[in-house]
Image (cartoon, rainbow, N blue to C red):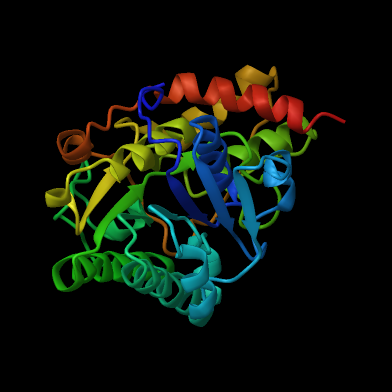
Length: 326
């Protein structure tokens, strides 16, 4: 793993917001393995206590059940913190189209609360989750920072706004902010349940349960599916990035491009299944094709993903077989 040699002094304090979620809990685990102190802030609206339960007895871990929409909770949580990894947000493009006001409140207002609290309390680095959805209707491939199109969903707009606030907090207040544009993250602890579940865990769960998965559209849409350990690497290395690289957004992907039909076939083969999927209407707000140019992150802080799609999906399938077994 490319983050094995990324280390911090033992007295370092991290705050992971959304730390009980899929990405957040994996970050908490990786940081605890580094021997640092970790605070996890989560209101458990989408995160799960079961994701962090293995860490609760660790003396270097503290769970704070609070909401990033509460400015006072943000101030208290960031007091004495060196690094903030802000993962707290509501995901899902389709759900954001149904609930734009809630997304505005959480993803923009909550992130702004965290940036302001970090500024007030002198946090060294503020690393936050953005998204490849900010590229919108841009048809250029690979996706490169500075070549964004018009956003296609409220979710994408919230992430674009977060990036602008990140830029302002660097230029106006000197807070070192780093936006990480995640490209279709997958892996252990990603929730396979619910109408808004991500496609990979949903396919795996349905196939294991003997159900017929649904592919929205013709299945020829492509994605840069990124294994969770690559995202952990991006976050940890961004914490050690030079101040000159702050105020910017960076693609965090695997640098590959996989078609949905091919992914479905790969998963079927790995599980020993032969099930013809149902094709439904394309989803509103979805980007057609996605592939990350990761050269900016590589140059700024040495991002060098260890896992391509093939290696990542094998590990993910093994985890879900264990997690979803009867």
